[in-house]
Image 1 (cartoon, rainbow, N blue to C red):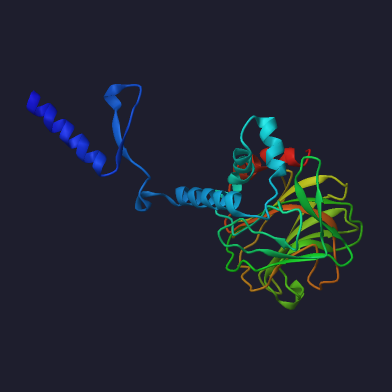
Image 2: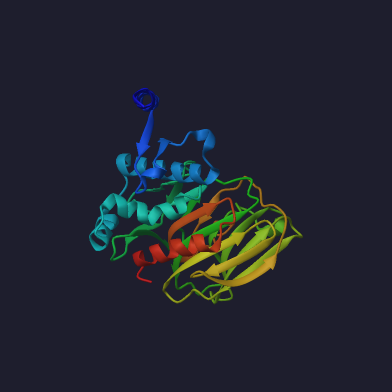
Length: 308
């Protein structure tokens, strides 16, 4: 018996030296050894995405001089958590999905809208002004005259989820708060997508063009009421949908691809003269059609920023 115990303790000691940690469980019979962290070769894509998003947010929180933490300090007091945990609470639901673009708009000043994603596709702001909500959340306001923003293109899209918050009282025909048509219309054969306001602003649309003759539109209803709305443009390569405030408004079948090398534009259409009068915040793009429950969760958390 003594020899067996000696051998057991020797094995435990050797395990500790190899970096294995001992985890206590309520039932002693279920005590296990667990190596930390999980080796990269055993992690799933989902675990890797969460890990990447978490590390990226940690780096921004610690190092970004442009980050205004006011809104997270405010909500830290409401939720009885730290400002850092509030930062994670609001941003991790989508950052854990490996976005290819995440414009959090927490700067409040300057001519750059920083991309929180690992790809750092920072946007250039031309004329649009920074504004702040009563909660402390910043957003960009476009005057409908000459304001716009440009973001490097996200190429090779075969699936798509675009999420953003928008407030508008736009009443003029065919304005484009968000698109990647570049400087050409779909009718010229350019591939791309766009979010448009049409028919005197009384309807919102999500358009996809695979070619000059293969063109599709779904309608999201009116948003010209001066209120903040959470819009989701969704495409899994076959089904195209538009959601307003998490409610599916329209759906149709569309297959093809929308690969191009054109920039993503904020607050303006393809001519760079048809500017939209609107406010935009939290513009995110994921190169995958994520499940409804994922963006519903994000909406339920983020809505408190906008008083919805």
